[in-house]
Image (cartoon, rainbow, N blue to C red):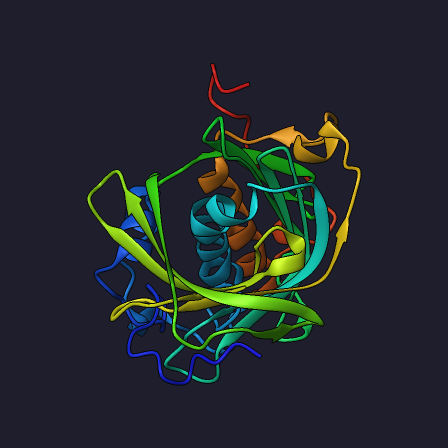
Length: 280
């Protein structure tokens, strides 16, 4: 269980507390920050707690930032995961799915939020840590868009943490304080519980910050042989101009469905207009 009850800060927009930390910076660099909590509509699946315009940008920034940096250094594996965000409007927002890692690449398949199907359908975030680029894939849209890292980590500092040895999901672990130094001068500080029998793979990861909070937990970790095509978007999916357009399209269609408009009906795939020249 990841405990966020003592976190002082929170997240970014639409009812999540706006902080001045790296999460807010990453979302702003992505062009997705700056909305106020007054924009929350609790019965609208787009802006409500757990809505696609709330959770998807956060998933992308976290997955392509500290998660990718800290889980891609060892052997190939598959695992189940839970990603929890602090939220002032209620208990932590918990997202879950399956994570695949191989050769410096990570694929996070997000399927559920607080135990329910993710609004807008399953979302996959793929990240290539060496190339500093990846994709966001939407099953509902049968489409994908490229994403670059908004927060680039340039150095990792590790120190032993208080609390000593223990066990997580049946694995012996140690604890470590980790600081990720970013290219924009910010530092991301986390506490990790690392599995000693899995090459010190972090099974738990918790952000230590005055303005942001999230926690990641991995379970059922298994060594795996993963093919390269798992870390690429499907060839028959439609290419959007970028991942921001994927977020916007999903939000638009959820809003249309909520208002009873046929334009956002489930089953419609691809963008409503062709990608600009030069983006194919």
